[in-house]
Picture 1 (cartoon, rainbow, N blue to C red):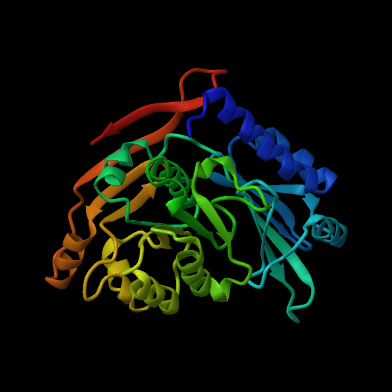
Picture 2: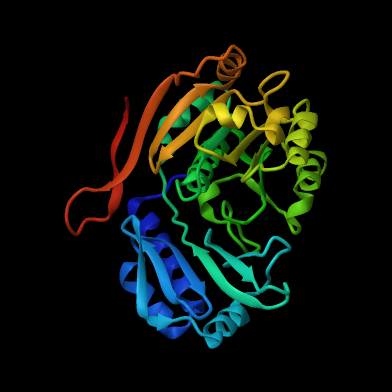
Length: 321
């Protein structure tokens, strides 16, 4: 599925508007001028609003979060899942509720702003052609979900609905009954309860004939063991948290992903947004076993940059280093 730059830009603006629409008026007014560069919003009861944009946190001392702000936003959110996360219909935005001390009330919200970028995974197309199975690793806010979504889009060009997204936090295919167009022709399964993600993986393969399963945020040993057990029936594309491939391979919770053999063909460490280190994951596991630091096959630069003042964002620096 191909998208013109105009279609991508229009969709990003639509997704922004859906977020702004549910925010309290004064918080909306603070976010709107910087939303193109904003990454995250923090609302904490009794404290000034904080917005991370242009790479750093900005505090709005004249806008202290009151109970009315929290009540207003909560009333506009359809459903908060068991992991205290919610989404916005048709977008990848993520809203995280901060519970109060008794667990019943709400002391704040975090809002992660997602963008529909096409092309950030284009230089990984060769990986899809060889074998699409990939583990994407990186810290929060580095663009793992955005990269996963575009990688799924490319893989779905070849594998169509044989690729199913098991969407735990709805950051990949979005909330709502209609999946975000960013996943292309791939299918999508919701995960109503985070703790049961492993069951939904099994269901996607057993009931949906998925040959390839994409998962955002593999974190627990149970999830890793489920991938291992199901790897005889399907191949996986997944993300996990961390910035050191050695530490991730040595993580006891994720051990089933790497031992006795690596369950993914490729390992990709997201160093920063648009900058990736690509590894042969089995070779990286062998290196860690031998006490060596894994060496990437290549470093890929797929940054999204401004071409000129006033121009829309586009892929301007696609190259391998």
